[in-house]
Image (tube, rainbow, N blue to C red):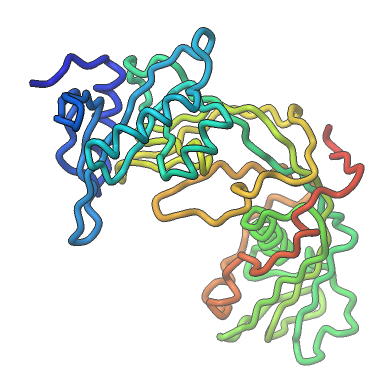
Length: 337
């Protein structure tokens, strides 16, 4: 016989049931343990290849203003229950967050800490709010250097990027986009960077001094900037929020993280974000990557250089970023603040 569940438990069961690697989701079942019957808020079976794992979610529909966050006692209780019931995957779902000792203990003993995300579901009474980290960075345009290998044709022409074209589109807009992509894709706030692109097919560009075939492109630029901590509401159509990794995992192919207006004038400057911000994403995770870039770039249409460039050179990610480049520039002040 199933126990009567709360609307929150039912909502959590519905959300978990939307993940493709989860089966047999049930809410409110009792189970026999060494000391008698034990209640189970939400149970499920996780399927990984040919393996199947028994899962249990303890649901805490707390009022953040009255009860506060989930404490270490809840973690201790679930740790005991999972041992009694032979649970493989134990999880606590809270919409009020978790106290630091609770997160520490849960991580140590392998208990997940999540929040349920489902836009428009009135059974989830409180929104999830957590600290996020954004970057504000500056690229001094006067220090951007572009080197085009044209076999000597333009070496003495003194051309600027805005004087070079592919068809009717400016080469400068492509340079701007590559810098944008590099800054956005990497957790960097200071340092000197070099973007290189080797041509694998003939690329003819035009300029005020005539045409030239480009053999390679190199862009050198510098950035300064800082990390900022802000408080943000986490939302998605259907998914979960991992309070330990600070990541959203979406449930359905049609699910998406929901955007909200961010006040970039707010935020507390920090030297460096926590380690989890700098970790790569796990399969199925998404994150909110907030970057405010001050550069004064033009916003004209970008020419399509991709078919001409070696595929490896289209990857904007930088391997082995030095720690100094991920640390805020001392006394940095964003020009738009």
